[in-house]
Structure formats: structure tokens, C-alpha cells
Amino acid sequence: MKKLLILSFTLMLLFACSGQIGHEAKKAEKLSKSLDYRDWEKAVKQYEKVIQIKIEARDKQFFLYMRLGDHYLYNNMWNDALRNYEAAEKIKPNNADVYYKEGVCLSQFFKLAVDPNKKQNLLRKSINKYQTALLIEPDYTKALYGLGVLEFYFNYKQDKAVALMKRILKKQSKNTDALFALARFYYEMGNVNESLNVYKTLAKILPTKSEKLKNVENNIDRIMNEE
Image (tube, rainbow, N blue to C red; front, side, top):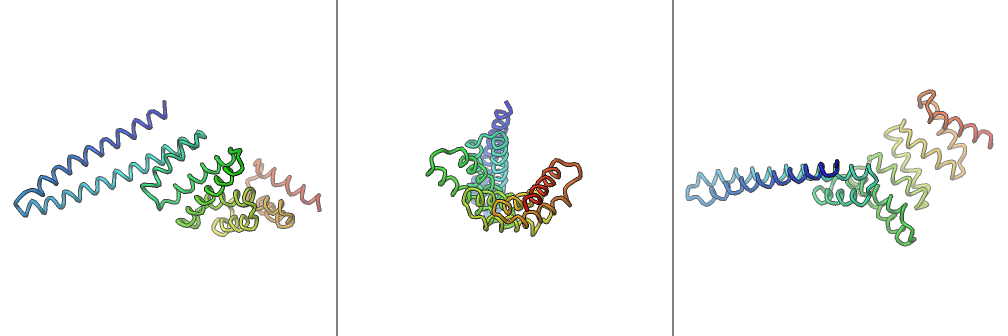
């Protein structure tokens, strides 16, 4: 039901914009056919109005494609989400958020795929989407994080993954997601001292009695006992 309401609202908005554009365009065309130069000046202004309505309509269309994509993404409907994000990309090809969310969808397809060749292709596409988002917005935290996880666990570029998490922390020193990932990366790379230091940093900034703090303290104890 919610899906149908969103789609109905989208169609109503687009039809309304289309009707308004048609009405204003007819007025502009009529003025342009006049033999009075003063009407030509009015026609120019009228066409500017038509162009502005089209721009506003495209902005609204982009917003609705993104909203639909987010709805499907939230409900794990990856194909429908990707379809709407790709439609949004055609309207605004320089929007970092679009590429990031396309990357999220493709990473889910990658995780679900069974065929090795298909998996590798989907991994490459997902990485490319994250990288494109970062070309547009270099400090996009979610894209840096998502790319870092893929590089470390699936593309096996561990040093690159570490560097990506450090880029996040350079801008947001208390980003707990990046700190957790970095601590885990170091641990799995065998750099237990580096991992321990990051966990100690987390222990200082996490709220007391939080579940995350308990996990950090357990990890610290485990590393200390391993030494």
C-alpha cells in the first residue's frame, strides 16, 4: 500500500508539471507568432518561465526517484532500488549520493551472487560506484567506509582499506565505525599493537555501559592475553 501511494504521488506530480509546462509553452508560442515586437519580448520571458518550470520539475523528479530508491533500499529490494537510483543518475550525473547508493545495491548483489565471474564483475562495479562518489565528494564518509570494507575483505587490498579509514578519521577523529573497522583491519593483518591502540581510543570515547564499549573491552582483554 505504501509503495502504491508513493508511486501515485510521483505520477500525479509529474503529470501536473507536464500540464503546466504545456500551458505556459502555448502562451509563449502564441506571443512569438505576433507581429508586434513587444509581444516577442513577452515571448522570451514566457519561454524563460517554461524553462524554469522544467528545471523545477526535473529537481522534483530527481527527489522522488531518490525517495523511491531509499524506500526500496530500506526494504532490501535491491533491484527496484538500483533502478530508481539509475534513473536519478540520468537527471543529476554529478550527485555523489546517487553513486554511493548504487554502490550499496551492487555490493548486495555481489554478496548474493554465486557464479565467480558474476561476483567479480559486481564487485568491480560496486567499487567503481564508490570511487565515482568520492571523485565528486572526496570526504564522503559513507563512501569511504563502504569502499574500505570491500577493499579489505573482498578485493584484498588491505593497505588501501586502512588508508581509506584513516581518511575518515582525519576529518572525523571520533567516527566509531571507522575506528572499529580500523581496529579489526589491524588485528586481521597481524598488527596487534596498532589494533590495541585503536581499541583503547574507542574505550575513551564510547558511552559508559554501552554494548559497544563492552565489545571493545572484551577485545582489549583478548589481545592483552594473546601477548
